[in-house]
Length: 327
Image: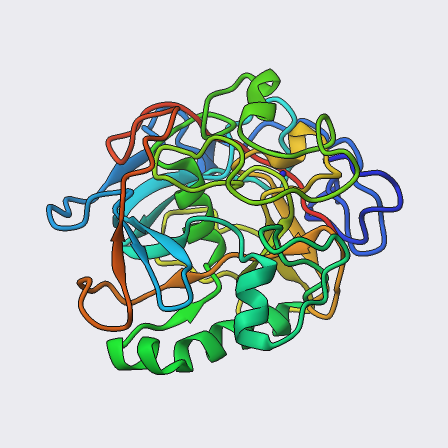
């Protein structure tokens, strides 16, 4: 999900030396800056799922509007990227994060069909019912989550939808891996897992056409940047539990890179940022459902396992990365 065509990017993540693109600026090549020893635990395993015998990573459900979600187990991981990672930016200080609760993550980015069902409109530039919705602001995404939560079947089942925090997003993207991408460190394989500058054809593409990560999530690398819940800010220097980002700010976090970015910006650890009111043709979102429940009620039904090709699941396996945002 980096370098975008100049006309593409209006904002991308960065801090410190401002190596990542901001609103109104095309992404620039990140400077490789080693993580300070006191801020990194380079020799530590990247992920370590907490024991959740009843919450297997990757188990899926379908909600009342036909949206598929994957169960993500609670656990801990090394957020950010090691100083040796190719293409990293200096805003990716590595630190240990613990997520104490499992959650459901949208299997794909929210599609135009799903957005229209809830919001009764489709602002996207690249039309297609299964294409990701884009040209939505942070507030638009939050409003969608609120309206979806208030739908009768979802409300009856006690389901609450929201944007993922930046930590939840990266943890779900990594899916137990420790490499630059959820499939390893080899950027030449990115085309098998996502739409980016090297294969995008100057537009978005239907979700779910590429390979998923080990937890059954599609398009975590590329297609469109994805809004996160957090205000953008520097990472903590030490470990964190259930972090929610900066307490205040003027720009929001976006993740995953887009169809207009090169591979560096599609890494798992790559951070982007955008003004909350931005509505760009490379900027969408996926939802998180914070309630963990059975298949009863709310029109929820189990989804077959994805049969994903790639790294192993919660027990940890392969990749980890950083990236840059759009807008």
